Image (cartoon, rainbow, N blue to C red):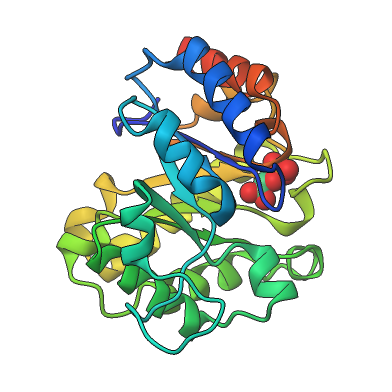
Length: 255
Ligand code: PGA
C-alpha cells in the first residue's frame, strides 16, 4: 500500500448536461461527502463546472476540469485559462489525456506549457501518459512513457514537480474493458517514479501516480494494493454517481 494520500478521480469526458451534473453531485455527496482518506475528484466538462461549484465547493469533493490553455487571458477564442478554472472552484485539471493527444493532436510541447500554467495558478495537474497497443507489442511502452514524462515535466523545479499527479493510462485499456495486469500497471508506475527520481531524486516518493484504463468497482482494490499505484483515473465507471461511490468505497476498504 502506498504511503501517499490516494486520489480517485472521475473523468466524465464529454458527458452530462447541467441538470445531470447537479443530480450527480447530490448523489455523490450523500455517499462519499464524509470521505477524507482518499481525495475524491470529479473532472467535468467546462459547462458543468459552475453547477459543481454551487454543489461541491464547500465539500471535501474536489472539482476538476479536463483541459486548459496555457495563456492567462487574451485573444484565444474558445480556450479556457487556469485562472478561469480557479475561479470556477477547480483544484485539479487533467492535462494531456490520450484522447486530446490523439484526436486533437496535442504535442508534448503543448502539454508541458499546460502543466506549467496549471501549477502557476495553484491547480494540481493530472498529467496523463501511456503507450498504444502497437508501441506495447513492439516493446516500446517503457520508452514512450518515459519520454512523455521527461518532455511534459521538463524544467520544473522540485517544489512544482511534487505537486504534479501522473496518470498512467495505456491507450489499449481505455474504454475497452481490458485492464493492464496489476503487475504490469505496478511495473510502469514504478518506472514512472524512477523517471521522476532521475529528474529530481528528492521528490519522487511524494508524487502521486494513478492508474487509468477500465478501472471499475471490482478491480480497484487490487490496483490500490500495488506499492507505486496511488489511486485511479476513472472514465466510464465514474459516470453513474452510485457506481462511482461504490468504487471509492471499495478503494477505501483496500487501504
Ligand atoms: P475508462 O477511461 O475508465 O473509461 O477506461 C479512463 C480515462 O480515459 O481516463
